Image (cartoon, rainbow, N blue to C red):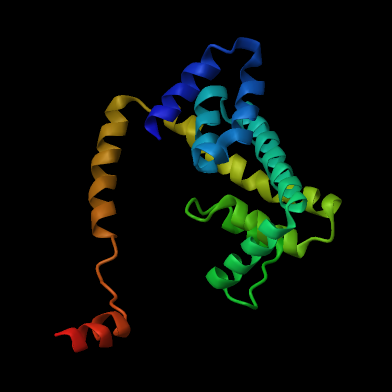
Length: 194
C-alpha cells in the first residue's frame, strides 16, 4: 500500500492542472487496487489541502458510489449474492438508517461498498440513493482530508514521537483471547482416528 501511495503522490504532483481530475479518477479505480477510501482522502489532504482535497474527495467518492450502484443494478445475480453475504455478516433483520451509515463510513475498517449496499436497500431509487450517498460521504471526506492536511504540516520531530506512542498502544490494545469452537476442539472424526 505504501508503494501505491508513492505512485499516487508522484502521479498527481506531475499532473499539473489535471491533478484534480487524476485524483478523482483514482477514486474510481481505487476498488481495483483494494485501497481504503480513508487512505485516498488522507492523500487528498496532503496533496491539495483541506478545502480543495475535501471537494475532490466528495466528488470522487460520490462518483465511485454511483458507479457501484450502476454495476450492481446491471448484474442482479451479483446483487443477490452480496445481499445474502450481508445477511450472513450482519443478520437477517439488520437495516441501517442514512445517519447510521454516515457514522459507520467514518470507521475505517468497515468496507465502503458494504455500506453502499446497505444504502441501496434503504433508498427508493437512483435519485434517492445519489442524494443519500452524497450526504453520507461528506463527513468522511471532511474528517480524513483534514487529518491529511494536519499530517502534512507535522515536522519529523513531531511524527517520530507520535509513532513511538502509537506503536506500543497498538500492541497493548490487541485482542488477547483465542476462541476455539467446540466442534474444532472435540472433532468426532479425529477422536475415532486416534
